[in-house]
Length: 424
Image (cartoon, rainbow, N blue to C red):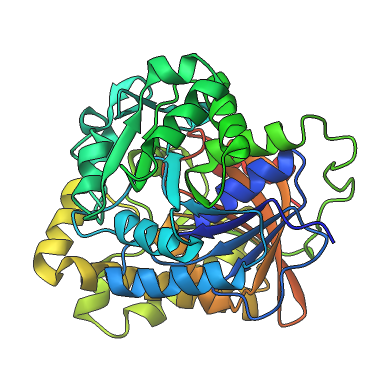
């Protein structure tokens, strides 16, 4: 039996969907499991993705869950440590601690090689520094993430703060010399560095890195965002004639449509501002002040959904100043938990009581909370609504539900309007 090429340990659900949509579109047969798998990897898949919610938990918890996921993926050719294309983390982790654990599991002499570069969505790495749409990460709007602010663009330094293992860089001049030069640089680093970050400024660079990785003497753990995974798919299956996506995409049952927005990113704020339908607003301060707020929100949502057949937006997205005010008054963790719990509870009501069957969810933490509350266990991958943003279908209590689980920073400003045109 052919082993899957990739077993992916993803630190959040939207990142898992981002990668899964990309590699499926490139021709790999792909499965997504929410949480550590309890069943064997399907024999027919080329890429098995495990979606965790480990990006912002305590490092010890992230390590435990990620190691369990890697063990469940035993038998794949390569373990892929999926993290955010903006390297979202703090000085404590969780990219470094998880990378350490995965390298240890891989065996003696193992090394991790990776890059967050995903040029298709404007993320590039040059001389170890991360750029967003041509600007240093530290000068972009993405530096202000409410849970994992990224104010330092030098990824070697960022990762070095999170691990006591040596971190090295394969810089752009080496990458431009091609796969052999990259593979030689990795070989020279074994025994010197445990983790290697690799520059990439375009898809040609990523293809060089992917080809080099596939030549490497194992054990090796691959790390990165969706960009390198898609390059591996392109390199391993250069034609998709034998590994094409199913012609019949997953379908959801007919029913009302709902958008749930919990992200505070600039792009999601633009998407909320561009939306012209009915909006139900969710405020963490109101949730904290009055326990009956959730009931009022439920009534507002029910009225909005039943008023007409257009999509309704349930939004906790707010201006950065409002987010800071809520975090100051309630604490960062409590403010986030109040919003996540409320949005997840309202999502369950929308599906169970209001008949919603198609749902867009904006924000990684929000997507994880909503999917968990719905009881989703696996996702089938459908069409891409935008780069990194695939439609998926899951089964909840024998109902087929279409979910578009979106990283806050992804999609054009009009995504909340255009995504439905390609949805299942």
